[in-house]
Image: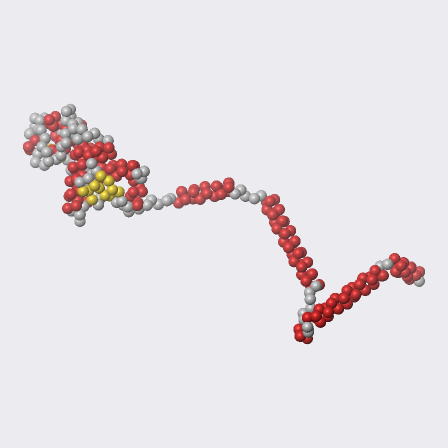
Length: 292
């Protein structure tokens, strides 16, 4: 708690006002009854009914009335008040302010608890600010402070755990390994559902298609290389580089015509060799050789 200036409160990154009405809303305690605090006296006769012997002399107790002097039902109720309202560790004795709180449960003895709690918080804040170097012995009403904070967080749709973590009051909780494994398994199953595994037949078909496409590409590349080898123009010599362009063209044209004539001659010779007359002659010669 950084500050508690009358009504304004600042705890971590949370700022809000504390009033009698806000305490009543957060704790669901009514704003009804006497507006009493510890510095105000109480009547002597009303509270004696909580004693085993209402007529006993209580002046014999120097530091509060001993718990054994109370009836059993009032002693148990006193313990609840000391733990959750006055926030003390002295459970063996009942003081006068305890008596007034117990009187609330008697007839016609109502008490405005939100008012009492507000003044008690203010008293705590002033003592803490005076003893800022050693505040632990002067801090109390932890349960009430938590109730007020949770009420403000609920209005902002926030949580107590996240409030503690982001203000460095508490370390973030560690995620157990089992939960991470489960999450990873769930993710894997969702991925499998979205992308089902391909069957073996489909994989084989895809591989065959890839091989076919590769073969086609290789064949095309081979055809291109063969064409380039056939029609590859001869590299110009040093003498040809100095010749004029017209002479070079005529020279190349003459070479191409000579090459064509040679190809035609080869084709004519092959055709003559495979003609029917030549075939008959070869058959006759074979027959003669066999007779001989």
